[in-house]
Length: 458
Image (cartoon, rainbow, N blue to C red; front, side, top):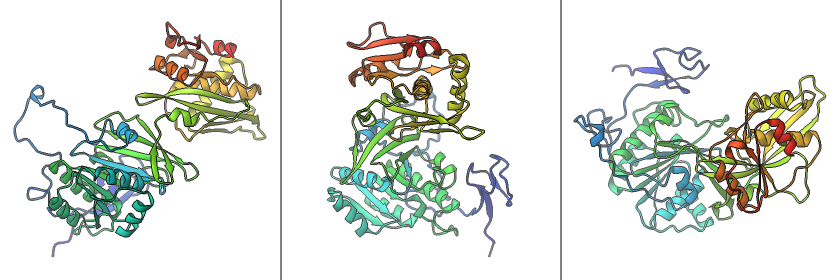
């Protein structure tokens, strides 16, 4: 009997090697090579060809076609019944797409998909495959969440061959796999959750979804550093990768797109974990602006842009005399390196020294700010804490700060000002390039060019 061939695959970048080595030559990571068998998955339902690998991208065309002659008719999307979920997906579920939903244990991945599946099953064919829980456990959760259970087809199975056979028979419009780490192919010797099993199982399920025009929803685990578990090639196979975030001590969950072939990747959806499951938050700015009655120094509201909408969040700064030779710089929700850079700009162009202070920064509500429009608000919050001077409650700030102390304009400045005015803010410090020709009724716009101008405006 011929010996099965094997290779060593890097779990970070997917590079393959004929023998094991400590460091991956492609991504320079250490101890990331895992042995996988090179035996191919058996052709199952929904596959074609001798190897079962043709048609991975759907219906293949044997003829060369001019790009200008390709049909541009838009594929109709299916609503997930959650407006926030549809927003992150780019407008809804696309038939034939594969969506990977990741998150920490307890974030609400299974709850979100069970709510979606139960509601969709009232009008569409939905198959929910559970590999981690028994059918009774899923039924108990659905009963606790008071979900409509009629019409939802359930299957407790971990064999990909069996799942594909059932899906071929049932022909569902939406197929939910919970989770991909529990799935396995019979002729792959490694345990479920291994590199080879996750990669081949996802490939077989995605191939079926493309060929049968089925929406595939996969649940994925994350590692302790927050990245999706399994080989890196898993994220290249699927069409959309979403991450559900939220601590166990917070009732709010944020859904952020990390990859999306059918929409923007910077959209943010906000949910609240309630007694009866996840409920979408229509106005996220309202929940992030629940400030205390008393004015406190170091607190300021800024306007960030998430996907296609503005979001008002509160940033808090705390400065204290440092007893260390190297003062601490701690930022929660913001880039710590950018904080250090902004403090240097504040010293050079604002004349305020913070080298003997511990600086702590926090974005309220667990929001992660990834854009530079928070620069000016961060510095003004730092100045407020340093001087122990509370800022007005009705003040809102946004703008990018350059290394020479200039205040640069940011995208969608007009929409940010309008959103702040809707929430009752009456004064805004903004870059001059974002100052509107006509300010909203009842709002004072202070346009600044330099950091010194912004400090004077306080």
